[in-house]
Length: 210
Image (cartoon, rainbow, N blue to C red):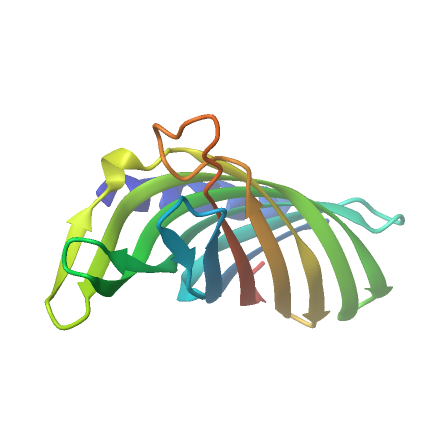
C-alpha cells in the first residue's frame, strides 16, 4: 500500500507541474461506484446478480484545441467481482458465493467533447489495465456456514479490458457513466473452453482541481 501511495503522489506532482505550463491540460479527482457481474460462469454455477463496490482516484485530460478531441489517462482503485449461486452435492443444499476483487486500474481514454465553456457532453473509449491487489471469495451454504477464502493467486493479473461511455462537464464538475468489459479470463489457469470474465457499469463524479 505504501508503494501505491508513493506512485500516486509522484503522478499527482508530475501532473501539477505539467498543468502549470500547458493551458489545454486538466487534472482532477473522481469517486463513485461500480456494479459488476461475472459472465460465462463454469458448470455448476449460475451468475446471481451484481456486486457493488467503490472506485476512486485521479484523472488527467489533454485537450486538442479547436476539434474537441482529448486523451484522458486515469489511475484509480476499483472494486469489482460478482455474485454466484449453485447447489452443494455433498450437503444437498444451495450455496451463494461473492467474488471480491480490488484492482489498481490504469485507463487511457480517447474522447470527443461537444460544447463550449463550462458545459459540455463527452463520449470516450479506451483500454483499461487492471493489476489485482486482492481477491477473495465468500461462500455461504444455507444453514451450515460462511467461509472466506483468499483467491489472489488463482486470479489472472493483470486483467485487460475496454471502457466506453458518456460524460457531462458542468464547470469544474464532471459526471461519467461507463461500461467495462474485461477481455482477460478471470482464472489464471483457465482452460481453453473456460471463458469466465468480469463486466461492470461505473458511475463517477469528478472535480477538476487544475
